[in-house]
Every structure is written in C-alpha cells, then in structure tokens.
Image (cartoon, rainbow, N blue to C red; front, side, top):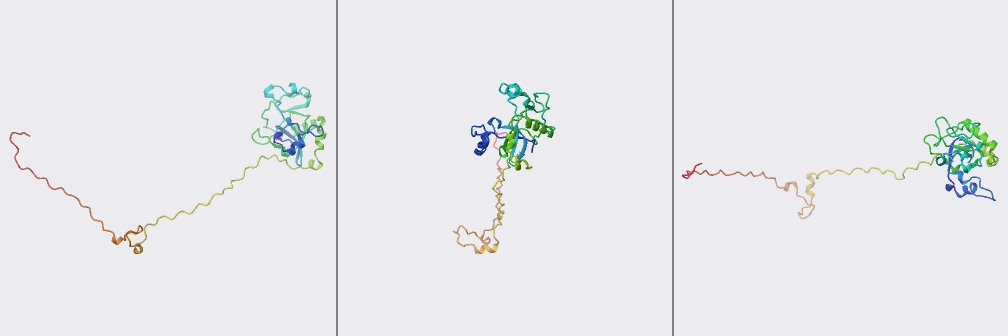
Length: 258
C-alpha cells in the first residue's frame, strides 16, 4: 500500500520488455529509470492498477565516506534542500522535519537513510519486491511523513508531471493492494506415501497328523518325511558304572616305613 517500503529489483533481472520500457533510450532521450536507481529500497508514493509511483531511499555510500550526500563531491551539484532525511540521519536543514517510519521501525542503516526529492519513477509492480533486510512486518512511513514528502515532491520534482501522465485515470482510481507478497511456498512433493503392505502370514507349524498319510512314500524324495508312526521311539540314556577297585591284601615289604 502507499507508504510501504519495498524493493526495486536490479535492472539485470528485468525482462526484455521491462528494459525496453524503463531503461533503454528512445528517440535520443534517456530511459525513464536510470540503472543506478535499481537495486535500492523504495517508498511507494502512489499506486494504481499494475503500476506504482516510487522514489528511492539510499545510504549514499555512507559506510565508506561517513559524509551526508550533499557533502560528497559526486553530489555537490544537487541542492542541499532537495534531500530529505529519515529520523536518525543528518538533516540537510532545520526547515523540514525528519521523515519517520511507524513506531518501533527503522532502516538497517538508521544513521544513513536519505531521499532525493528530485527523483520519482513510475514502474510496473512486476519489478517491485519485498524489502527483506529487516525482520518482522513491512516497513511503512507514518501518514504524516508520507503526506509531507508527497507535497514536497509534487511542488519541486521536475519529472512529477511526466510521472503523473504515465498513470492512466483508471489505474489511479484503483484501490487494489500491490503484489508485494514473497515468492509462493514450494508445492508439496509429488511422491505420495505408499500404503503399508499387509503383514506376511506367520508360519503355522507342521500340518495335522491326519495329513501325513498324503506325503510321498519314496524315501529318496526330498519332500518326503517319515510319518510320526515310523519315527523310532527315543531310548533312555545308559549310565556307565565303575567296577569296584580290588584291595591289595598283601603285607607291606619289610624295611619300608610309611
């Protein structure tokens, strides 16, 4: 919805049709969307149908230079008052208030989050994704800050009228929410669980004695077994007994002592 912080995908991921309508030059004019603006978090200022009016949020390489963008050599031609700062970042002046997110929310780099109010773009929702650098719910500006930034850009952005013309009246009147949902969860595996096979029947032991008469009589047949009536009865074990030892009754030899 309007005021959401989303993500503008990098131009390298655009389709040929998206590049032709947004990036490529035509009739000697620059493309509507510079490549350098892609791959950044964006503020959804307005949306309708399958399009959104957005502006980028950037740290302007603050990690490397530790300078606000208006103090960097590469941005000295830009007017200082055309920058806006989110709460926690250095403000360009004391005339305009900080831009603010909903209570409890902040950017991953709260000390370096700026908006250049001279840049606005109309892009299809197909090139917008979810800003996933923060955990939890979607970052969103307060209504007051969104109205403040919208009025600032409407009054000073040189491409504002061109952006508005890119919206058709029917699209501007649409109130359907943009498709910023994450990628769908992968479908369940196509391999369904197979039913458990029934248990094998347990071995029931030998057949009843009445069936033994039907067994083959040929003793050389490997399937032949003796009927119970032909089995030899077991014999009792024989216990061996030792014979008594003979006693020597002869007198001991003389001259020997025990």
